[in-house]
Length: 399
Ligand SMILES: *Cc1c(COP(=O)(O)O)cnc(C)c1O
Image (cartoon, rainbow, N blue to C red; front, side, top):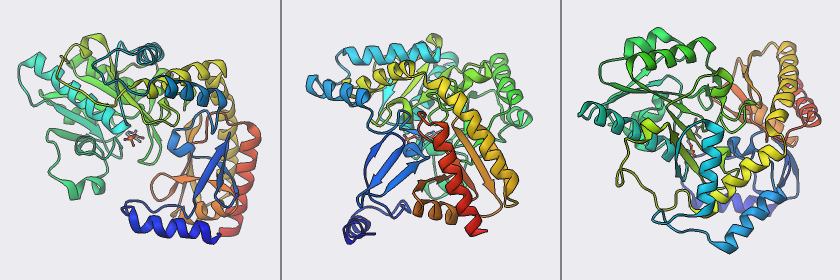
C-alpha cells in the first residue's frame, strides 16, 4: 500500500463513525467487471457493491442517460409529475406484475413503506390499528427502527429496543412455524425468497407456495423483499417469478438503480388503494435523476439479454463452485441460484477473503462462515475461471 492510500484510510478512520470493518483499500474507479484502487491495482469484483452494479462499472449508455438527465432536471419534489418517474414506474410495474409503485431512496425505506401500507390496509379492513407482522429468522430488512423490528437477527436488534411492536418471527422454510405465529391480528407475512445477509438461504418451493396459500386463505398480505435477490440476480427479473408465486407487496432497491440511491415498494391495485394522500411521502424519492437511471436499467437489461446471461453463466458458476466444494473438506455447503450463490465453510471465512483481496479478487461474506458470490450480471465464463483459480490458490495456501 502506498503512503497516499494509507493516509486516506487513517484520516477516514478518524472522521467516519466506526460502524464497518472496512477492507483496507481505497477504490478509485471501475470498468466492467473490474475495480481499481488508488495505487492502480486491478481487482476482479464478485460483490457488485453488494448486488448493486448489475451492469458492471462505467457503462457508457447508462452514464450517458444520467448525464443527459443531470443537464435537464435533477429534482422536482413529488408535488409535480415528471416523465422519467412515469417511465420508471411503468417499467417496474410491467416487470414485477404489480400495479402501483412508490419510489424511495433506499431499500430500508422501501421496507418502511411496505410495513406502513400493510398496517394501513389492515386498519381500513378492520377499522382497528394493531396489525401484526410475521417475519423470518435470519432475515435482513434494513437498519431503521421499523426495518430493524422485522429483521430476524437478534444481535442487530437487541441494543435498540423497544422497536415497533406486533412482530413475530417464524422459522424460515418451516410452514408449521408460520402457522403457529398467525393470530386474528396478523396483517402481513414478509420474507426474502432468497435470504441474502442472513447467510444466503433460498426458500423451498413448498414453503413459498405454502405461505402464499395460507395468506390467500386467511386474507393476510404477502410481502416479498426482493431488494437483494431481485432485478435479475437469480435469472428471473424478480426471484418469485421463478417460483411462480406473486406477492401482494414487493420491495426493491440495490440493482434497481445500478449505482444511484433508489428503492421502491409496489403493490396490487387493491392493496395500494389503502393509501390516501398524506399517508406517506418523501422529498427525494423517485426524482427525475434516479428514475432516469431506473428506466435506463430496464432498457439495458433487455438490450443486453441480462436475464439470459445470468441463467447461462449462473449455471456455469454453479458447476464450478460445486467442483470447489467437492475438492475441499472445509466447505460444507454450496447453495444459491443464478448469480447469487454461496459456499459455506466449517470456520470463519475472513482470512480467505483477505487473501483473495491480496490476489486481486473482491469477495464478500454473509455471516461468519459463508462466502457470497454476487458478481455484476455481465459476468462471463472467463471471469468465473479467473475467480475459481484465485479462490483455489487461496484455499491451497490457507488449509
Ligand atoms: C440491503 C437490503 C436491505 C436494505 O437496503 P438498504 O438500501 O441498505 O437500505 C433490505 N432488505 C434486503 C433483503 C437487503 O439485502
